[in-house]
Length: 383
Ligand SMILES: NC(=O)C1=CN([C@@H]2O[C@H](COP(=O)(O)OP(=O)(O)OC[C@H]3O[C@@H](n4cnc5c(N)ncnc54)[C@H](O)[C@@H]3O)[C@@H](O)[C@H]2O)C=CC1
Ligand SMILES: O=C(O)C(=O)[C@H](O)COP(=O)(O)O
Image (tube, rainbow, N blue to C red; front, side, top):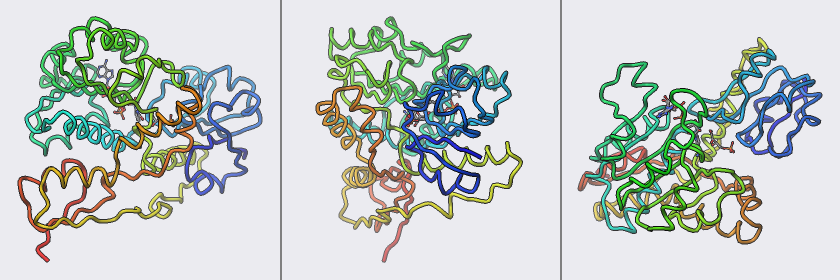
């Protein structure tokens, strides 16, 4: 079997090696000529998978090691009888780590506490619901909006988008990009909703760029810099709007989900689906292959002030400023589009909060709840 894999997929040899010969290419270089003689194609979000790529090829199965599927023409694959799998939830915890690291940074810069804030989560799937669970321990009020789930599950506690936007001080978008139908998400935040955001609102988009009208957001920020904006995803990646880039508070190149833990889980999920497709046993397990965390444990003495301690653990594990500053360096050196892709391709190792154990000698000021809310494994020990 011949297998073509995006070069930014970790553990591809370990998982797929037993199936046949592996070729690796940058995701944007995967084209019709490259896939023609392949049997299995494993991609990430930057490869458009459609008839133009696959017609006339031998490919029988396509896997994307991502949550999102908006780069894949699912109808075409179905009609062509080509098997398909994505990796639901694989990097959801990584996205939640990104959101919490960003919120902590803004809270420190602006001198506010997350406790007592009202946070609106739009899209309550794997990412949104895990964010809500973690915030639950932090004395935050969570407002939830997910019309497809509200309809399917009869959830009366879910709000409409406009009701959520009216009340939320912090708005987190975790929706897929859906361009058609009753629940389309393209420009879910359109010009009128962006204009209506109350001054001081924090807006975080770590779903898909086009869920927010980027031009309308730029116009609003040019008129008044009264929002705090975190964008990990953008319209027209990698050639994003440079003027908008200059106006937002935290700008990163679609790396919220790029923990090594999330990427490896993505490879494993696609491997399992491919083995099912080919009727083979999936013997490889991520547990056997995963590297040890590089930072295992932090011990906090009884003198640790709670807020500083939370900040220290968060930054030790993942500090969003590293990605902001690095992206800025890359885009200055290489230009926006090249820098955007280059930083993602060279992305440094990042582990999820759940890989770090925090040992506490004393549970002062609700520190244990806050640390557990952020996702760290906490042990209270008097020794
Ligand atoms: N920035 C990054 O690195 C990453 C971004 N993502 C993006 O985040 C999205 C969400 O990820 P998951 O939560 O794992 O997906 P999911 O499929 O588990 O959940 C998405 C949720 O959005 C809801 N939804 C759909 N249309 C909606 C609408 N019009 N309004 C409100 N909610 C709506 C769905 O009902 C579903 O519950 C992915 O589709 C992907 O595009 C995912 C991983 C990494
Ligand atoms: O899983 C998703 O969906 C994502 O957005 C990925 O984290 C994006 O990573 P790349 O596929 O663009 O490397």
